[in-house]
Image (cartoon, rainbow, N blue to C red; front, side, top):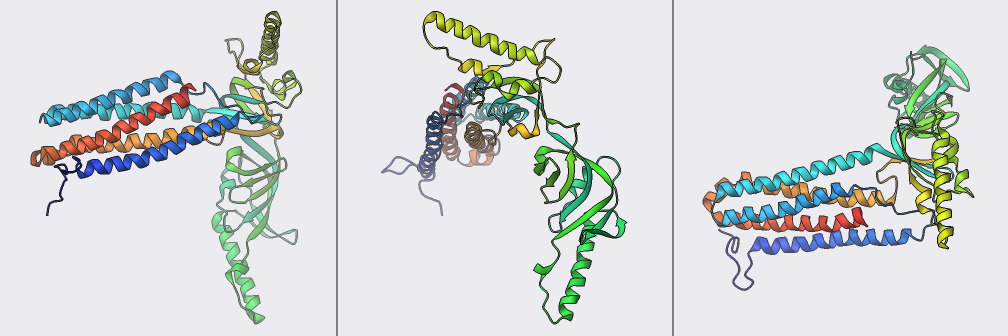
Length: 433
């Protein structure tokens, strides 16, 4: 039995089933993206009321976004031409134009991948006085020295800290009642599990001998060990659950007691490209912590002098014009580089409030950016897959009923136009505003 109105339109509406379906689907898509766009607008307007939060501007490459806009517009034209060639029953030309559509989608996604990659490699550090620095080449390695005590969560232990030990691994002894007991052994996930099983077996025997009932919840959960000799570990701060001056806690709940080495005085940013002092708690931005930590290579006065000169110049220009100076551009400025001068910064760990690459963790703007562009990119990918199927895997349907294939391509084209329209809204609000 053939489904009615699959190819021929209904006499009352002039539409066939798939076309009604795609319009209903696109209506739901409009509500989805409309809600996201509305949320973006309200969050941006609300940011003006936050004294220490400034909505980012100029963080995205406008030329890059413009190129992607042109690519999607061209692909929308190409899909119409492909549909037209199919209506003219020229399957070869249909495949040619549909191939161009898919190619445009691939170029768009590759470009977006490069843009995402740049954000993943760009970092920001928020200092304890709310001053902010941006740059590349983050090094958040911490070295802990003099470690002898280790506390382990038996269930979660995965042996990660053992892989972080610098040099030869020491042997360990179990700690009971505050004193080491037993023979030294190589600590591993297997040896910890075996020891926990032995302790549980002994406890179970005691409970059952006393007439009690043993429950797995009564099993050992924490074990303490002491190393035969002090050892050191090196680990990225991001791989730790909690960092303390005299201890490191891993994500598997292992707690190692030791002191941060003087060799890792803080968080390093190898190539500084921006300083933002608009929200600093210092009474005068010139007293911000940034200047004290700037550039480990001995050129710490260069950027500070540039800042002071720029501020004095603005004050003088404002006085000549008879109005108050606008320091917003001074307080948020790019760092100049030259062959002789290359700015970097080392922020002591106690002064690091937040650090991250330019991902949703960094601020609200990037959370929205990745949500909107990621969802749109997913639509581009799925749309390209469907159009590729229509263009290069539908020969049998074309030979059987070319009008049916033309209807399918038209429906796919409507979705593709919607994807293009969403980007036309995304580009100005994210890249230009």
